[in-house]
Image (cartoon, rainbow, N blue to C red; front, side, top):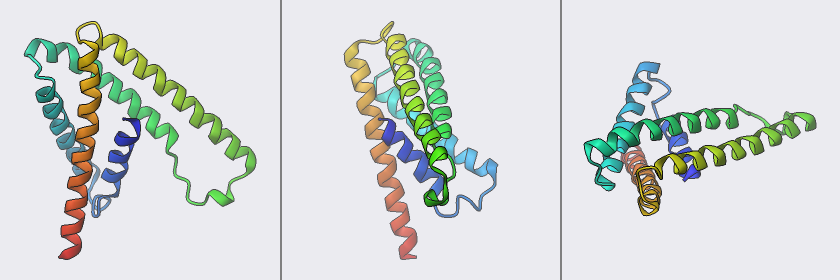
Length: 150
């Protein structure tokens, strides 16, 4: 799941013309995708209003923590050959720390969700996230292909 979400964010930042947009437009784009994801998961888990009120604050906190880890791990590195060995060692340590923290926040998410969701529902959530990411990637590829044909 981590890799799928990271791929989504990479593609969002790589969409042609997105860099030309101002920050507000990019944020609007992210918000639209987030709204689609909320609808997709809400429908997929057949959430009642009561369940959604419990679920979304926990899930949103998890997503924010995961995004912060993503930013820590993905620094702008233009030329890997030019960094020193000591800097590379520091980066490896940071990558491992991020992976460990990601495991911890995922474990906390599952623990928090198990208070009101079954294990089967949490597995279904995991599948829904993967399905959403596949749909988003497919949409990106379709749009990219149609723009290239123009």
